[in-house]
Image (cartoon, rainbow, N blue to C red):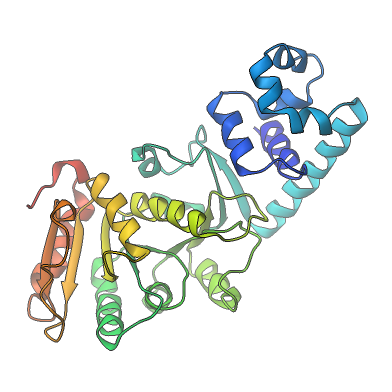
Length: 313
């Protein structure tokens, strides 16, 4: 597999060859190493459609020397990742999280920094707003107090606000937490999150992204990132959100995946009759702390059940 890893990383570094191009290569079921094999590559260029689609690659890799130079860069990048504890995991790898395969468009690859085994454990995706209200902070903290009893991995997005409260609560409880990025693995975003990232790794968790190592942030990237958060959770808990918020994308993905969804509020918050009916399948709506027992039971049931078999509404 190292040959494919090196070739993939070599292609990442070619100017004008980005995420979408590499995704097309995967979709065409072409080996990344084929572009560097001077015996196989002529077969690719015979296909007019492929020659046009991947013209930038063929322009860069037009001589044996250019192929060799690019592969050397790929080797250096792979060595660096191995020293840093970053794994490049393809869909064909046995370490690839099976839950991601539930998606209509699962990532063809993921980069994982830290403890990759955390991706195989039962987990709750707990996400929410960057701008936290007192009630939202209370709910996130309350969930954090329940983590030891649930003994579960959390999945969130490293963003300021609810996400970081969830990550820190897991670390304080001695449990792994997973941060799913909307950027490349080499970017520190949001600014100032470097320390928390290291705490996540030191606590047995990991950082995950499907984006290329130096990819920057964009609204589109964060929407796509949300489907990974939803898929990695056995249960999804949107802590503070609105119908037009970024978290709403995670909720919609979770609903499409038939993941159990927990909607909780405090007595000070309005009733949750604003939640669209299409997002109520596989869900419960509770008020905390009055319905604490039902709150815990919902998570415990969701963590031992197949998501597609659970229907509460």
